[in-house]
Length: 159
Image (cartoon, rainbow, N blue to C red; front, side):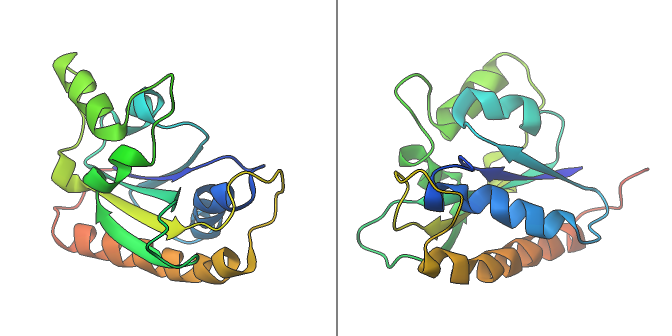
């Protein structure tokens, strides 16, 4: 089973891009894929990742060197500065802790990050900024491509 996690607050403008992309994709046919909206990262993601063969995490990215609405696909190392809060750890640290506790977690190489560069993650709003709204379909396409690539390289799962 693969899991696609849309990470972010649905009430903080562009921070809601992850859940928005997951809602778009969840209405499509993707056998062997579970779609999840998550509002916190770090250790709280371990339960969603446990027992999966891989994951795609969609999140807003703050990077002043990139343009708002740009879609960036990477491994989890990019999540280290973006998915942490002062009361939690980042995703790579959370995975290390989970593995040390014996949780069945996917390898780092089986976790992809699809990030959309955000303009505004502080305004209380359910609406995305125009640049990020325009990037939603590009992020969906990136997730579909990763799923197709991962499904092409893996044996079929038993129902």
